[in-house]
Picture (tube, one colour):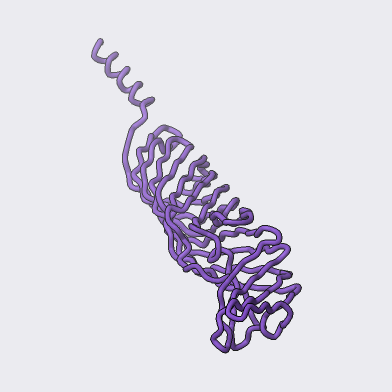
Length: 286
């Protein structure tokens, strides 16, 4: 009789216990995020304003899952995994140089005479924008409905550009050799030039970002989940690969048709990419 009671108790207890199992899970995802997404740098004179942006891409996660089986179905308890994928990212920033700032370059005219080239402007506002391919490699940990991710993101710029609109600037040439100043000959690039637009390409290279993410996982079905969280990316290396250049792109063959280089080539020391915002990821498991 005692043996029968013990057997009944064991069977009853076993029916209420969670049976633990491990299995491999493959999850494919579509994801998007947005918020602060900018270039970080210091200007020797003026201010930098951050910009907005985001990313969109496809992902894949492989993880080992400890799962808990009950009478109502399976519930994931703890998951360790590796996440990777590919996506497109956008970054934006704006530079505002100081009012009445004077920039001095050294140029050579068509007759091979060197001169000081002074440029001044009441204001100069430049925007920078970057479109990139982003490749993350991150560790992922899930506990119940919460998830955390950490790793790195490799960013490859595919279109980086700058531009300024409605600029008024004044150019002046000073020939130290002849002690002569030229300030009102527009055909040689000197004088006041109003309502000008300038643009060009930024010399950015690939860079590595520290990538962090965390949030909540909501299971929509046995195979489909929605991850909602926040993310933070910060550049670990200098993304700017250009050399210091003169502010004015001066052509001695056509001096009136000048342009400007980006303020990054003029005053920026290091340029890093940074992003922070909200992330949504829809995953399909198999």
